[in-house]
Image (tube, rainbow, N blue to C red; front, top):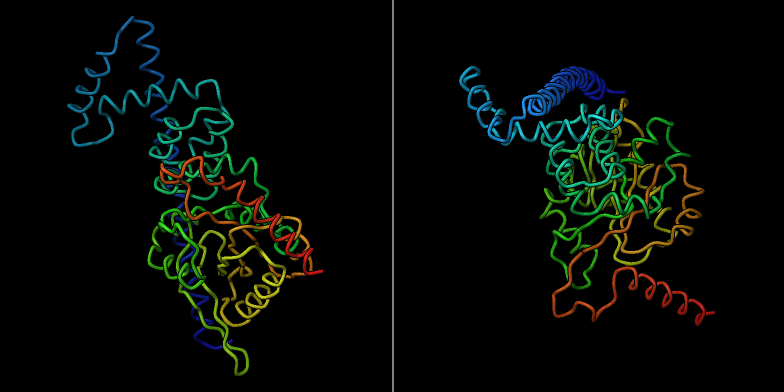
Length: 347
């Protein structure tokens, strides 16, 4: 190991220690803030019931608080009503309340106002905590129906066989079974390079869709072996997983050879780019359609952690086309049938 690599590892250890301490302090302060809001909501409800006070008492309370605690935001009438609602929602749900204490107030309000069932709240509270979703990312996940996709879609990866148990669970949480690339505005077939270029041009939206912790390193990232050069479509670093994440884009249905190519890329990344303190590099193959059984067999011989996910380019149809073209599910069935028929004709 050369001196520069040794220093990079040393420097990263110090930075990780600083960030870890800051994160723990933040989590502690956040928990106190959520507990405080819950207690304020409780006091408001109890006193309204006891004294038969109406809505106007909250406006009065807000004005008087701001006279005493001058310049401190967060005690408007609207926010006090939210604290009251927060208390009523979670007062008899200790499991959900404990999760709610782990995430910021802004994310709590999104879940409180947009999510109806306890099961769905449990999913978004847990995911926001584990994956450290920002408010923008959480809103994007809710709009993309992440919970519904979680219920019906089986994630396709070999993380449990190629990563330590704790890292496998984290990686599985970070990987989606389907990514929504609707923000690209693509409504017709495109080549892989055009898809890649569009994603790079819209990298901020892509990072939001990928989830918290992803940092973009580059596209067409060059690796060398002997005299040959190889290029990874998109390369990221995930600060939560502490590893490089290679993404390969495909505009055709998943094929088994994609897994072999990704395994090769990950071998090169681990050999040439991974720092000593990094976890093993992870590969994600993005394609418009996949067969989970075919993916399972393709990943069995791989000794590198690889996930295969689908992507959708648009969730909405122009009004004049509604009801006149197949749904995404119907389109997958048609495409799968056509591919199988073509295979039978070739025999």
